[in-house]
Image 1 (tube, helix red, strand yellow):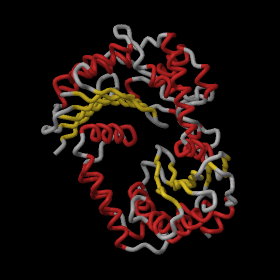
Image 2 (tube, one colour):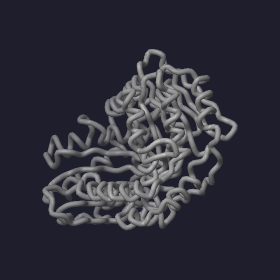
Image 3 (tube, one colour):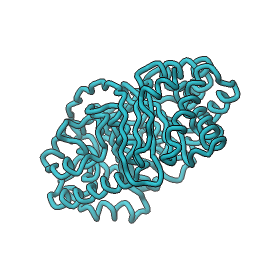
Image 4 (cartoon, rainbow, N blue to C red):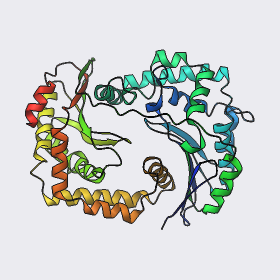
Length: 420
């Protein structure tokens, strides 16, 4: 059983250890509570750019030596940028834990942002943006975020735009880091055969010099009901539609997860059965729930032909409408069991446990224990799920985004009529 301990250093840095005595590896992560959402209007994509630059050289290591130092001992290093966080993480054998702390502290405290690497990485990120645009099943989600949140920072592309990425300088990158990469905005988490005393000692040694940073206020977004059709010569229409949903700290968190699971979370879900199996309208369809600190979204993705996109949406919306009143206990129990299994299965992986623990601390300021999560799932009732479905439907009108052949005639008012 994993033993989770947390503490806080004098400089405000949060520490967490997940003791997993039988594991043969360690996952070490540093989470920064700042992402694409925290960018200024002239900084779209800068959080992601800075994540790339962290690996491009420090006062004592070149980009190549960072990679070699990790891979010489069989380790793996990576990072990701999301809307509300940026994370840097290393998987290692237990005997190399101190090396992991050494390298992560080096790239986060001593990055030099060399000019030649900025120019080189600028080209790499512009290629990444192009690759995303060329992948319509990825690009449609970027478009959907803009449809939901407009010019609010939650609606911006995490990767940025070619124009924004082309303009960033070392001064601007350093400025974003100084504003957000402070001790009080960061979490260090280690999962594996470790003790909290080990983590605390190494964190004090390598991250003790970490100073303060600003903590800019986030602004609550307004959910917009927007229809966006991006006409492209493709075989399929990649479609996402969705609604405003509860935030991560809401009491509706677990009912939302149950609703998403039974509605479109697997092969037995309503969407899969009614849209794909019974009518053959698409190959891929699923629902998703994305929860932020102060808002959320609940939506559906499907890839279908231009001739069936409107029928697919009609069937999907009708299935959601039915969730307000026509839910079987069997569906609820199945969805809850899938969530229970996911909670338990994730606990076998050091990477998953590091990620879950750090994410909980970033969102909630504390870690939810296994039994607490299982009890919260068990508590979800059929009535609560039905009530939440009604709340979502009666809230702001949905947003819709389609990337592909522009033959869809479905309007927002048509979607509302189906749900009425």
